[in-house]
Image (cartoon, rainbow, N blue to C red; front, top):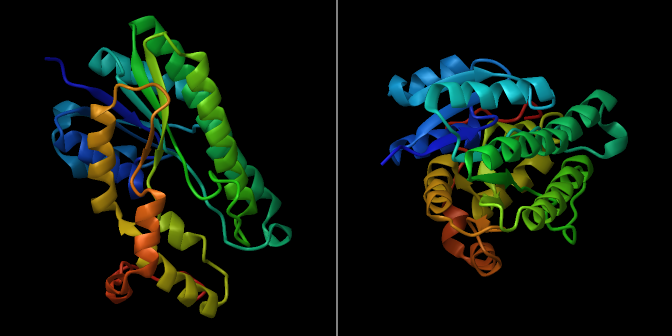
Length: 269
């Protein structure tokens, strides 16, 4: 049987890198992608016959088309496309967030998702099938708000609407469109959101994340396995459901964890 070919945008570090590593361990061929340093990240994975590195910007349609073309040229097709590339920005009120950061977060998180989905759908329709998955995050549930997350959260709220809408459009085409919800994952992007915020705010958040969160090496393999098992259009693959989240909040055991041990603290501290 031919190996499953997986493209993960924004996969040179963090959860994206964890996903390509997990898919590779599950026997897939993978495409490592980022604005830069994709070759460096790919080299860490080994198995060069099943790994391709492609640099590119998800906010540029030509770059996204080149990513699809490179994957097909190397592996013959793309079975799974994960729109993972994202930016967070500092966790500060929107009036304090630089205009350039606002534009970059919206462009990467929303436009990048739209372009990736659009171009993957075109290619998958021609090849007769495939699966597109969009990464959710804080803001996907519009009822939950948090100071400093207005711009990032707005993009993820829009990504959920976009994903659910497109999944309806592709019904019956043989292409599946769905979402991945990793929950709270300790990554460089998460830590970067606290750059410039008061140290006391970071310490409070650190305690919360230790209760609610997980490391990449726990979340990524679980998500990758569920993606390969999925045969349902409109699937919402979530690492943590509401009941499990409640258990994390009340469990005294999780107070003793330190997911940030060994990681550099935010610049604010």
